[in-house]
Image 1 (cartoon, rainbow, N blue to C red):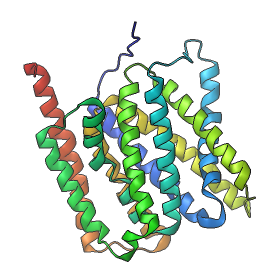
Image 2 (image 1 turned 90 degrees about the horizontal axis):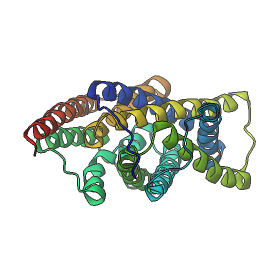
Image 3 (image 1 turned 90 degrees about the vertical axis):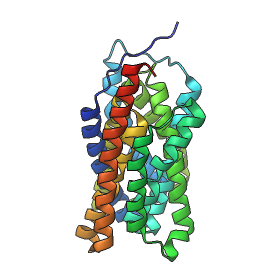
Image 4 (image 1 turned 135 degrees about the horizontal axis):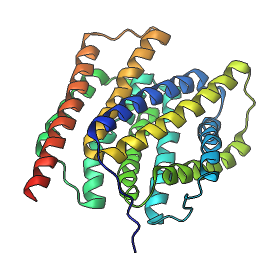
Length: 299
């Protein structure tokens, strides 16, 4: 017998979670950029998930209703491994290319999500929602202004992170039908901590000073906030509608680039940013309305 977990979709709440997730990811990325090549990527990933696991574990242990057994274990593993690999890729890329470029390439996930969703679940993206997605990617192209760096190995790795993230996003929606948010986070944090921990033991390098330790702590705390908010976002609303909101990570990243590294956005960047925001709003609004109409008509 399938133990379906009842979830009421709430688009407004999903949007709020999405914005908070984007801001948290951008702040985490700033810490990754600041640490740079001083520490191996595996260490950053280990602190990212180790801190998350430590914070979540007490909530799991005191929850008498928590179920360690999960349904759809294959989907669980696909979600965990693809998300973990995506984070390895983006953390690596952030070290070698501008923050905004890395986040832009990572956030090509919405481009891949409809394809992945169709392949894995047969889900179709509402036609009107596609307008918003296309508009958003026009904004991405304007901001990106491809130069020689866009074809670097680091840039390619950042792009791959977008594809991996899309697979993980779709799987979140699949396993959320039979799992609680706490279950999804627990196993994601646990497996990721173990995998990153093994690599860290091999590549360990002591942080140079207290500031580096604080930034590692920041990676863990804001990484935890991101994971919680993004999971709640995709659980509360359809992934094909919520994923464009993750473009806000690019906007926040651009602001931090300006404040911390004196990278002042030009006119094209501002225009691209506006298109991304407008595209995301169109996708959420028209996509949700079309899905609601289809439910009412029984299509």
